[in-house]
Amino acid sequence: MRTLLLVAALAAAASYIAPAAAQPRGLAGPPRTARQAAPVDLTGQWVSIVTEDWRFRMVTPPKGDIPGINLTPAGRAIVDAWDPAKDAAAGDQCKPFGAAGIMRIPGRLRISWKDDQTLQIEADAGQQTRLFHFAPVADGEPSLQGTSRAKWIPYGGGRGQPPVGGSLESVTTNLKEGYLRRNGVPYSTQTVLTEHLDVLQEPDGSTWLVVQTLVEDPVYHTGVILSSSNFRKQTDRSGWDPAPCAER
Image 1: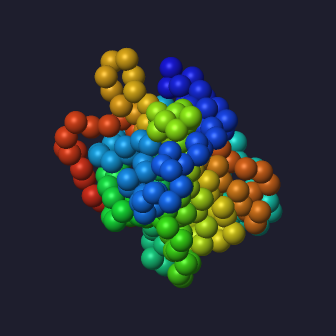
Image 2: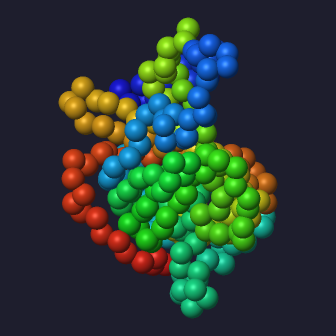
Image 3: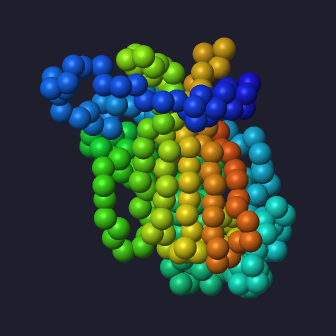
Protein backbone atom coordinates (compact mmCIF):
# COMPACT_ATOMS: atom_id res chain seq x y z
CA MET A 1 0.00 0.00 0.00
CA ARG A 2 2.80 2.45 0.93
CA THR A 3 4.56 1.73 -2.37
CA LEU A 4 1.41 2.33 -4.42
CA LEU A 5 0.65 5.55 -2.59
CA LEU A 6 4.21 6.77 -3.03
CA VAL A 7 4.17 6.05 -6.78
CA ALA A 8 0.92 7.96 -7.11
CA ALA A 9 2.30 10.87 -5.09
CA LEU A 10 5.48 11.10 -7.16
CA ALA A 11 3.52 10.91 -10.41
CA ALA A 12 1.25 13.71 -9.26
CA ALA A 13 4.23 15.79 -8.19
CA ALA A 14 5.90 15.32 -11.57
CA SER A 15 2.78 16.56 -13.41
CA TYR A 16 1.99 19.43 -11.04
CA ILE A 17 2.05 22.93 -12.49
CA ALA A 18 2.12 25.73 -9.93
CA PRO A 19 -1.00 27.93 -10.18
CA ALA A 20 -0.76 31.57 -11.05
CA ALA A 21 -0.69 33.97 -8.14
CA ALA A 22 -4.11 34.03 -6.53
CA GLN A 23 -3.82 37.66 -5.47
CA PRO A 24 -4.36 40.58 -7.88
CA ARG A 25 -1.19 42.11 -9.26
CA GLY A 26 0.29 44.62 -6.89
CA LEU A 27 -1.41 43.17 -3.80
CA ALA A 28 0.84 40.18 -3.21
CA GLY A 29 2.46 40.07 0.21
CA PRO A 30 6.03 39.09 1.04
CA PRO A 31 7.16 35.65 -0.13
CA ARG A 32 6.26 32.86 2.23
CA THR A 33 8.99 31.10 4.14
CA ALA A 34 9.66 27.42 3.58
CA ARG A 35 7.96 26.67 6.86
CA GLN A 36 4.84 28.59 5.86
CA ALA A 37 4.79 27.06 2.38
CA ALA A 38 5.22 23.45 3.54
CA PRO A 39 2.61 21.27 1.80
CA VAL A 40 3.25 18.45 4.27
CA ASP A 41 4.25 18.25 7.94
CA LEU A 42 7.47 16.28 8.45
CA THR A 43 8.00 17.31 12.07
CA GLY A 44 7.89 14.89 14.98
CA GLN A 45 9.71 11.78 16.13
CA TRP A 46 10.00 8.80 13.81
CA VAL A 47 11.31 5.27 14.35
CA SER A 48 12.86 3.23 11.55
CA ILE A 49 11.06 0.06 10.47
CA VAL A 50 13.53 -2.18 8.66
CA THR A 51 11.65 -3.91 5.84
CA GLU A 52 14.50 -4.45 3.37
CA ASP A 53 18.22 -5.25 3.48
CA TRP A 54 17.83 -6.50 7.04
CA ARG A 55 21.18 -8.28 7.18
CA PHE A 56 23.05 -5.21 5.94
CA ARG A 57 21.33 -2.77 8.30
CA MET A 58 20.61 -4.56 11.57
CA VAL A 59 24.11 -6.02 11.87
CA THR A 60 27.48 -5.20 10.35
CA PRO A 61 27.89 -7.57 7.39
CA PRO A 62 31.14 -9.47 6.89
CA LYS A 63 34.03 -7.95 5.00
CA GLY A 64 33.46 -8.15 1.25
CA ASP A 65 29.75 -8.99 1.54
CA ILE A 66 28.39 -6.33 -0.86
CA PRO A 67 25.79 -7.80 -3.25
CA GLY A 68 23.95 -5.22 -5.33
CA ILE A 69 26.82 -2.72 -5.22
CA ASN A 70 28.83 -2.18 -8.42
CA LEU A 71 32.20 -0.63 -7.63
CA THR A 72 35.06 0.80 -9.62
CA PRO A 73 38.51 -0.72 -8.97
CA ALA A 74 39.20 2.16 -6.56
CA GLY A 75 36.01 1.42 -4.65
CA ARG A 76 36.72 -2.29 -4.54
CA ALA A 77 40.16 -1.63 -3.11
CA ILE A 78 38.60 0.28 -0.20
CA VAL A 79 36.15 -2.56 0.50
CA ASP A 80 38.96 -5.10 0.45
CA ALA A 81 41.08 -3.01 2.83
CA TRP A 82 38.26 -2.22 5.28
CA ASP A 83 39.35 -2.61 8.89
CA PRO A 84 37.01 -1.22 11.59
CA ALA A 85 39.83 -1.14 14.14
CA LYS A 86 41.87 1.10 11.87
CA ASP A 87 38.85 3.37 11.35
CA ALA A 88 38.43 3.69 15.11
CA ALA A 89 42.13 4.38 15.65
CA ALA A 90 42.03 7.09 12.97
CA GLY A 91 38.91 8.71 14.43
CA ASP A 92 36.84 7.65 11.39
CA GLN A 93 34.23 5.58 13.22
CA CYS A 94 31.54 8.01 12.03
CA LYS A 95 32.06 7.22 8.33
CA PRO A 96 28.89 5.04 8.16
CA PHE A 97 26.87 7.88 9.72
CA GLY A 98 27.29 10.45 6.94
CA ALA A 99 24.39 11.82 4.89
CA ALA A 100 24.43 9.00 2.33
CA GLY A 101 24.26 6.28 4.99
CA ILE A 102 22.58 7.65 8.12
CA MET A 103 18.96 7.12 7.00
CA ARG A 104 19.69 3.40 6.56
CA ILE A 105 20.96 2.92 10.12
CA PRO A 106 18.18 1.75 12.48
CA GLY A 107 17.19 4.30 15.08
CA ARG A 108 14.99 7.31 15.62
CA LEU A 109 14.75 10.69 13.91
CA ARG A 110 13.55 13.98 15.33
CA ILE A 111 12.48 16.46 12.68
CA SER A 112 11.92 20.12 13.54
CA TRP A 113 12.36 23.60 12.10
CA LYS A 114 15.68 25.13 13.08
CA ASP A 115 14.40 28.38 11.61
CA ASP A 116 11.80 29.35 9.01
CA GLN A 117 14.07 28.37 6.10
CA THR A 118 15.94 25.39 7.57
CA LEU A 119 14.55 21.97 8.43
CA GLN A 120 16.57 19.96 10.94
CA ILE A 121 16.77 16.18 11.21
CA GLU A 122 18.45 14.74 14.30
CA ALA A 123 19.38 11.05 14.40
CA ASP A 124 20.01 9.32 17.70
CA ALA A 125 22.29 6.84 15.88
CA GLY A 126 25.70 8.45 15.88
CA GLN A 127 24.24 11.67 17.35
CA GLN A 128 24.12 13.24 13.90
CA THR A 129 22.25 16.36 12.75
CA ARG A 130 21.32 17.16 9.17
CA LEU A 131 20.19 20.59 7.96
CA PHE A 132 17.99 21.03 4.88
CA HIS A 133 18.36 24.57 3.53
CA PHE A 134 15.50 26.08 1.54
CA ALA A 135 17.24 29.47 1.25
CA PRO A 136 20.50 29.90 -0.70
CA VAL A 137 23.50 28.73 1.31
CA ALA A 138 27.22 28.69 0.58
CA ASP A 139 29.33 25.57 0.97
CA GLY A 140 31.63 25.44 3.96
CA GLU A 141 34.26 22.82 4.60
CA PRO A 142 33.24 19.34 3.40
CA SER A 143 31.56 17.41 6.20
CA LEU A 144 29.87 14.10 6.98
CA GLN A 145 26.44 15.64 6.42
CA GLY A 146 27.50 17.92 3.56
CA THR A 147 25.32 20.75 2.30
CA SER A 148 21.68 19.85 1.63
CA ARG A 149 19.64 22.20 -0.57
CA ALA A 150 15.92 21.50 -0.35
CA LYS A 151 12.68 22.49 -2.04
CA TRP A 152 9.04 21.53 -1.81
CA ILE A 153 7.40 19.57 -4.62
CA PRO A 154 3.65 20.22 -4.17
CA TYR A 155 0.89 18.29 -5.86
CA GLY A 156 -2.84 18.68 -6.28
CA GLY A 157 -4.57 22.03 -6.07
CA GLY A 158 -4.43 24.11 -9.24
CA ARG A 159 -6.72 26.88 -10.47
CA GLY A 160 -5.67 29.08 -7.59
CA GLN A 161 -6.27 26.38 -4.96
CA PRO A 162 -3.56 25.37 -2.47
CA PRO A 163 -1.80 22.00 -2.94
CA VAL A 164 -3.28 18.98 -1.23
CA GLY A 165 0.10 17.47 -0.39
CA GLY A 166 3.70 17.35 -1.41
CA SER A 167 7.18 15.98 -1.07
CA LEU A 168 10.50 17.37 0.09
CA GLU A 169 13.29 17.07 -2.46
CA SER A 170 16.88 17.52 -1.31
CA VAL A 171 20.21 17.43 -3.13
CA THR A 172 23.29 17.00 -0.93
CA THR A 173 26.87 17.67 -2.01
CA ASN A 174 30.06 18.91 -0.31
CA LEU A 175 30.50 15.59 1.49
CA LYS A 176 33.47 13.99 3.17
CA GLU A 177 34.12 10.38 2.24
CA GLY A 178 31.90 7.91 4.04
CA TYR A 179 30.38 4.44 3.94
CA LEU A 180 27.04 3.42 2.43
CA ARG A 181 27.18 0.22 4.46
CA ARG A 182 28.97 -0.37 7.70
CA ASN A 183 31.34 -2.92 6.17
CA GLY A 184 33.27 -0.31 4.24
CA VAL A 185 31.25 0.24 1.03
CA PRO A 186 32.56 3.72 0.18
CA TYR A 187 31.24 6.90 -1.33
CA SER A 188 33.54 9.74 -2.34
CA THR A 189 33.68 13.52 -1.99
CA GLN A 190 32.18 13.75 -5.50
CA THR A 191 28.96 12.04 -4.45
CA VAL A 192 25.61 13.66 -5.24
CA LEU A 193 22.86 12.45 -2.91
CA THR A 194 19.24 13.07 -4.00
CA GLU A 195 16.39 12.35 -1.59
CA HIS A 196 12.60 12.56 -1.62
CA LEU A 197 10.79 12.57 1.72
CA ASP A 198 7.08 11.70 1.66
CA VAL A 199 4.49 11.31 4.41
CA LEU A 200 1.80 8.66 3.94
CA GLN A 201 -1.27 7.81 5.99
CA GLU A 202 -2.32 4.17 6.49
CA PRO A 203 -5.95 3.07 6.97
CA ASP A 204 -5.08 1.95 10.51
CA GLY A 205 -4.28 5.57 11.42
CA SER A 206 -0.50 5.22 11.44
CA THR A 207 1.67 7.82 9.73
CA TRP A 208 4.76 6.87 7.73
CA LEU A 209 7.78 8.73 6.43
CA VAL A 210 9.26 7.20 3.27
CA VAL A 211 12.76 8.34 2.28
CA GLN A 212 13.68 7.56 -1.33
CA THR A 213 17.45 7.87 -1.86
CA LEU A 214 19.58 8.02 -4.99
CA VAL A 215 23.38 7.99 -4.66
CA GLU A 216 25.54 8.97 -7.63
CA ASP A 217 29.31 8.64 -7.19
CA PRO A 218 31.52 8.70 -10.29
CA VAL A 219 34.65 7.81 -8.30
CA TYR A 220 33.74 4.59 -6.48
CA HIS A 221 30.52 3.38 -8.18
CA THR A 222 29.76 2.34 -11.75
CA GLY A 223 26.03 3.07 -11.48
CA VAL A 224 23.46 4.77 -9.28
CA ILE A 225 22.34 3.19 -6.00
CA LEU A 226 18.65 3.39 -5.07
CA SER A 227 17.11 2.63 -1.70
CA SER A 228 13.92 3.23 0.26
CA SER A 229 13.77 3.62 4.04
CA ASN A 230 10.58 3.60 6.11
CA PHE A 231 9.90 5.36 9.41
CA ARG A 232 6.73 5.24 11.51
CA LYS A 233 5.67 8.34 13.40
CA GLN A 234 5.55 8.03 17.18
CA THR A 235 2.82 9.53 19.31
CA ASP A 236 5.38 10.47 21.97
CA ARG A 237 9.14 11.00 22.32
CA SER A 238 9.90 7.70 24.03
CA GLY A 239 12.75 5.46 23.03
CA TRP A 240 15.11 8.28 22.08
CA ASP A 241 18.57 6.84 22.72
CA PRO A 242 21.46 9.03 21.46
CA ALA A 243 24.55 6.91 20.97
CA PRO A 244 27.97 7.95 19.66
CA CYS A 245 29.35 6.59 16.42
CA ALA A 246 30.70 3.08 16.63
CA GLU A 247 32.77 1.28 14.01
CA ARG A 248 30.45 -1.75 14.30
